[in-house]
Amino acid sequence: MGIRERLAAGETVLAFGLGRVMNTTLIQLLGFEGSFHALWFDHEHVGFGIRELEAACAAARAAGLENFVRIAPEGYALVTRCLEAGSGGVMAAQIQSAAHAEQFVQWAKFAPRGRRGLNLSGFDARYGGMSAREFCERANRDSFVAIQIETLGALEQCDAIAAIDGVDLLFVGPADLSQALGVTGEFFHPKCLETIDAVAAACRRHGKHWGAVTVGPDHARLLWEKGCRLISPTNDVKCFRAGIASVREAHAFCFE
Image (tube, rainbow, N blue to C red; front, side, top):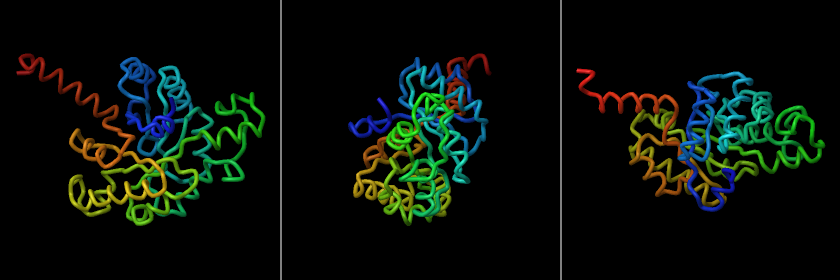
């Protein structure tokens, strides 16, 4: 079941962030372990190559994990490269306004909704195995598009962003949002909680879903109770650090 289908069914989607450790073995391990429904690949902060992304997307499919890629909204070409590489969708970081979000959606959609460049040689067109019409209709229908709310501009226009046709999900970036609000790292500050309420209300008004990176179990529960249904509680680096800490605690006598 895809991300949109799970959300539409009222389910919570648990997403694992990957970037620093783009490794197919780790992806397969996550699939075997079975706790997560999806992966999101962090191109914004890491900048991995398309060949790495192709391998990661193939591993995710084999492991039964949905995936999407977070990217900086700097140009249409990277959007279509991610989709052609096999990603199920794209998420725009650092969106500044509803007009900015609309531009990103147009990069991800073919005509008549958008202006994505048409090429049938990628994975999403089955490497030339689909007709242009079938491909465009299917891609416009199935490609997942998320917009991050983490700047003051996006926050001020989150209602207009949620109203955009083709935006499937608003995604709260708590770290940059707290920074933009002048309360860096204070994720339970009233200013941060007010913004969460604003995003949740905008999504309710327009029949959209919202997600977030969460910074701990209390934060995750708070957001879930406010309607967040795509939750990203950890990533590759956090898991390695937690694993090392767990081993160190269990074998404390060895480290004395």
